[in-house]
Amino acid sequence: MLTQPFADAIAEAEKIITSAPHVQGEQDLVEGYDYLAGSIRASIQMAWAYERDFPFFVQSTGPYTKMGLDNPDTLYFHAHLRDDAEYVVTGKRGTTRDLSFQVLNGDYSPVDVPDSLSAFDDRTLEIAEDGGFQVRFGPEKSGVGPNYFPLGRGSAMLIVREVYSDWSTERRGMIRIHRADRVGAAPPPLARDTLTKRYGVAGKILISRLKTFLAFPEWFYLRLPVNTMTEPRPTPGGLATQFSSVGHYDLDDEQVMVVTVPASDAPYQGFQLGSMWYLSLDYINHQTSLTADQARIDPDGKIRYVISERNPGVTNWLERTGHRRGYLQIRWQRLSRELKPADGPEVEVMDLAELPRRLPYYEQARITPEEYAARIAERQAAVATRMLG
Image (cartoon, one colour):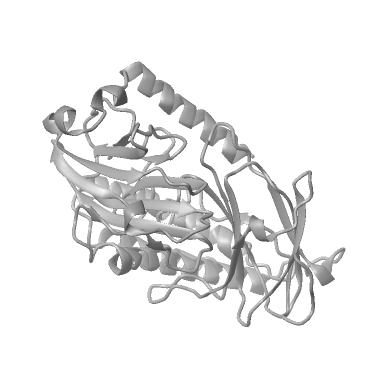
């Protein structure tokens, strides 16, 4: 059977899910099988989109193809490259808070993070008044100009990120890509050998994807003391102008974690929770993430997030949605300066009953169930609009 290698990979992937070290109950297992479904879909998409001579942008993650603690505020796109060819990216800048480009020399693996060969945001580009731009990527000595970026040896993938802060008002832009010397040409017709290879590649992507992002938290999160967060630090992987603070939590249902962080002068600042599968929680129907624009900022210029299972009745509640354990991440993007420890978070764990007494500005932070439901409705509408473009 032509599809047998992929079928074998799915069986192996199921064993990876069921034997994951963090699986402690039915919820973990159900979420693992849901993650597997999204990974199967994404692996097929990746294998069929592996086209370096006639490339196109593919949405790398989404609500049903999550991976790698995906940022709820970001649309991720990727295209494949050859390091000896020239590519043209044509686009129109949207109104999102950030637009960044990154060239990698490969993909993430269970033992390695790919090198970032080039990373920059749209401040580097010359952009027309109507938002239009053209960027060229190619061999080091073949092109010049402000919007020309050399492809280092081993360049294999271009990643584009559009980052939202105000989900309701900001709108995505447009991007497309083509290889400069293939305009008007067409790829060869499909052959059986091509499909055989693609099914095999899809299986390898599936297994690598699952193993990689189960190993990733061990490198960067789980060796940290529980219920703490790090000082701001450059995000691993060489992403341009991004710092992050990370941690992991373990809370019972009567506990809350209060994370206090200054509202930054960075154009983008966002906080999210993640499951032990290293995925974003449901950010459409629950408030499991907040940007600085979405959060309530206290009179002293600080944002106080309240992480809990039970509703604390405050605006900046981050819902655990039944996850006793999970990951914490704050991102700052489009920075024009290095962040210092004072820019980072302070963490306190307390009983839910103590919150009214211990949370500064508690009375001003309160929210009614009806007001909170309106916030959720706004999230649902904003994500639906964003995903349709």
